[in-house]
Image: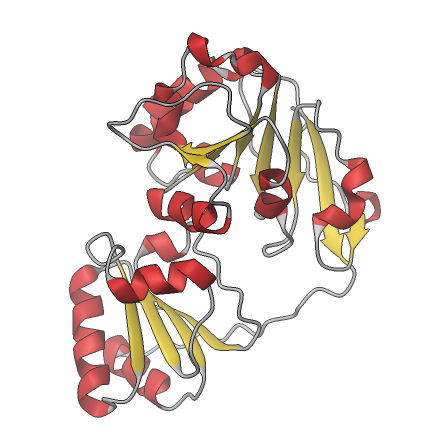
Length: 275
């Protein structure tokens, strides 16, 4: 793998989605697709036939499957039927696919590939990485998808990189706030901001405190909490059906909101990271 990210001069220009340059994507090649978030990478391949798409988390798998109900969702405890056009599962689903599935006709698509090869916890991912890369040879070809233009090595195969760039990319403003009372400052900022907000706090106890304070100070504010315990609750499942937020909604979540929950709203007022 040539792991150097091409310069902008080598990138394929798109307005919004990689499907605009479909003729430049050879579905029979081993590819690393680097494209901005919300450029339709997953959607493009979920509209192709003979695809096995793997995601880093079950919640992302469920999110994509809700938009592609004709695909087969690979889950624990169920035998996987043979010969379907599209399969979707989390990374562990590779264990469920065997020789009987004639994988040589399928393209293996790994979504959010940086999560697999650049995990913050390599000891946790090591076994999964080995199991997946050892099975590359069973598939017709392998395509990796990422919105993170960082160099990483892919063991076991030769792979060609295709980079996409939006003609008019959005330019978000980053504001770093240093304070002696970060939790209080975060709550105040949320309450003083109108519109839809997404808040990342990778600590369930802190999330519970923030939710409690917000509801006490503004009971009318719609709050959706995404953690491993709440992801199957009614409000969370309703959101995953259409991926859009009601006005003035605050989404608070752990790492799972960074690993692929799709927000289709183009009017999110603030994205906050609590450290």
